[in-house]
Length: 140
Ligand SMILES: [Zn+2]
Ligand SMILES: [Zn+2]
Ligand SMILES: [Zn+2]
Image (cartoon, protein in one colour):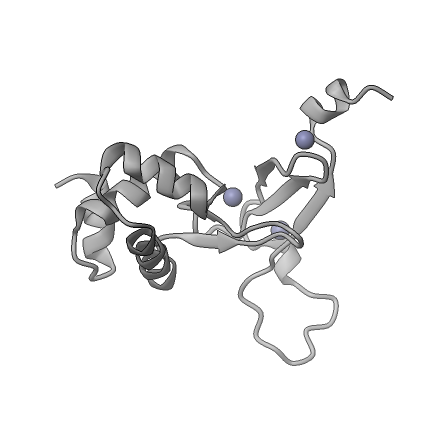
């Protein structure tokens, strides 16, 4: 059994070729959008339909194996790095996304200055800026 199969079994999802292909695509290409996932999966399983990929993404996201992020104004992106409260930095110019680790240990950003009585378990932080590629390639 591969580790991807083990991941599916751990959340009681049946092991199917499209599910394995989507997980493998996201593991190798974090933060891709749905269209890119479809293209990557089709390289592996050519017969898979758009709808099948949508369904797999939903099942994997619901199960917690995949995290869906959607920066304002961008299409939804998916990644397999879950459960560590990491954050993202997004390039305003080209849309490139990179991971930003939260501090190790109890995530400091989970301690809201005022939690309004809520039990907080996740902080979604998006840093916006311009990536190094865009900084060097923009003729001013
Ligand atoms: Zn950029
Ligand atoms: Zn990420
Ligand atoms: Zn944080």
